[in-house]
Amino acid sequence: MIETNDPALWRNFLPWPDAQTHKHTRGRLGVVSGRANQTGAARLAARAGLRAGAGLVRIFCPPDAASVIAPSIQAVMLTPFASAESLAREVEGMDAMIIGPAAGLDDATIGNIHVLAQSGAALVIDADGLTIFKGRAAELFAILDRDDILTPHEGEFERLFPGYLAKGRVEAAQDAARRAQAVVVLKGAQTVIASPDGRARININDSPWLATAGSGDVLAGVIGGLLAQRMDSFDAACAAVWMHADAANRFGPGLIAEDLSEILPAVLRDLWSAAE
Ligand SMILES: NC(=O)C1=CN([C@@H]2O[C@H](COP(=O)(O)OP(=O)(O)OC[C@H]3O[C@@H](n4cnc5c(N)ncnc54)[C@H](O)[C@@H]3O)[C@@H](O)[C@H]2O)[C@@H](O)CC1
Ligand SMILES: Nc1ncnc2c1ncn2[C@@H]1O[C@H](COP(=O)(O)OP(=O)(O)O)[C@@H](O)[C@H]1O
Image 1: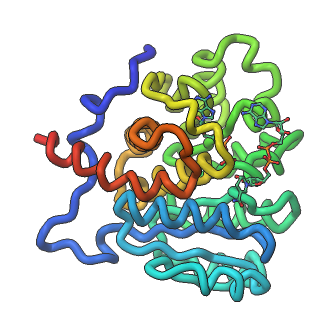
Image 2: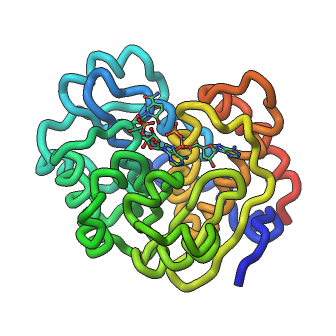
């Protein structure tokens, strides 16, 4: 069944803090950064995750990237790691992890995804985290859980699910979610969100102003922020896609990826006011 993605479907499941909440109970989100010259994408995702309400957000970076990232973050925290084994130790206790934005197309990214899949955190896998599995997608699908989320644009989708798009975007995303046994967010005008149980929603508030570098990294961050707060993965993906597009529509001309996280509070405020 295909539904139109609408706040009425998930607004009452959005996570809000209450008097008993502290930052650790609100949800811990981690983002894996690329090397020193590729850190912007992780920073965009981390800030968006914090804005989406994760209580604590930490970037995990290769050692050479630490001195680049440290001066450009404030509330977001930073932990360098030197190997997949050390990443495995450092991410203990994380509720959700994002990997892929500018992660690097090398074996280290594959090794890092393998250890994150064992970590107990819900995963958002985007960008290089998808592309690196071109020609070996079964290896990725074998380690995913049903609460993990893949966020391909059409180019990345074709690398993991060759030929599927010939059936049309909705059927392609549904088949992909069944094949991967994970939630699939097929990005683009009218983003399709598909669950491994066959449900699918199509987003219709998309904004062409989102066609700008880094906007997908911000979407990964919003999804991760909601996941870290233990929102159901399919609903979190639907909510994040709608909120991301709503932020872009509110900003309009001149939008760059950095703007999206700054508009998010207004989007959240309206959803909070309307929650029952
Ligand atoms: N501030 C940053 O540090 C940013 C880093 N980014 C990262 O930079 C790395 C490389 O990004 P690239 O843009 O080269 O990689 P892509 O995989 O996005 O693009 C490579 C090729 O894929 C095809 N493609 C791209 N988008 C498509 C679409 N929507 N539909 C169909 N085909 C499409 C095009 O042929 C393109 O040349 C990624 O890891 C990405 O996460 C980007 O997210 C942009 C911002
Ligand atoms: N023409 C468009 N209309 C609506 N949304 C778009 C359009 N182009 C891109 N987007 C959205 O912008 C984001 C781009 O993500 P992505 O391609 O991963 O970019 P990046 O890798 O630069 O972050 C996605 O959320 C996608 O749905």
